Image (cartoon, rainbow, N blue to C red; front, side, top):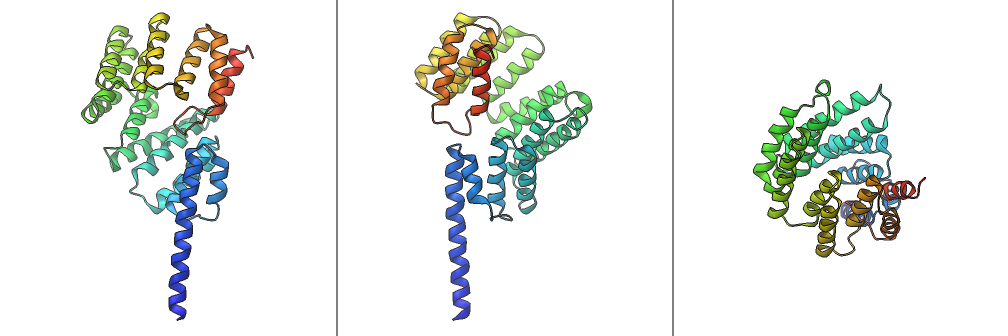
Length: 281
């Protein structure tokens, strides 16, 4: 009888934890990161809970706590590519926000974990993309390099043709072959006529000073996904960077801040910072 009670208690505890984790994930998807964390405290040692805590901390900008949580999750499940990938992301953010003395070490760790994530699961497209970005942007003494990025771009193309063209566009832009970069972005959009691919081209045309064409593609994106928050942010960001249509940029950002966001959308703090910039602050 005592043994049966113990088994029942263990099962009930497990079911409660699973339900708690599910509710915490739902809060995360609604960008209620602090509330999600509150549900997860006390679940230390559970790899999935540690991983979700890491993502919550990451989204809140607490990158030291994020790396600690991701490391705990990876220690429990060392073969989990997703855990290694997010740990790399957290170290990348620490590199971007730390002192010149600490940044190189964090950057190197970011690269190592991106490489580990790809080695654990070559089909992890997001990890592959982040590794490509790292190789393209980081200097050689930190493990970056154009040739490394080019090799990863070829691997990306084998997995996803549209992403491959996007990577080739970035490589062409780095070579200052702007027409080639634009062509690659157009090919990516033709293969995958989705909002993200349309925005890639709209933003690139804006960067090249071709504002009328850029606005036409922003309008096309709005037709595909009306009132999508990321379109509002991308359009407002382009306007602010170009110092034009600032009134419209402010209106878009106010609307963005009032929208229901997901973790895939730019954070509200970024929108508030952009709004301040658009207002001359």
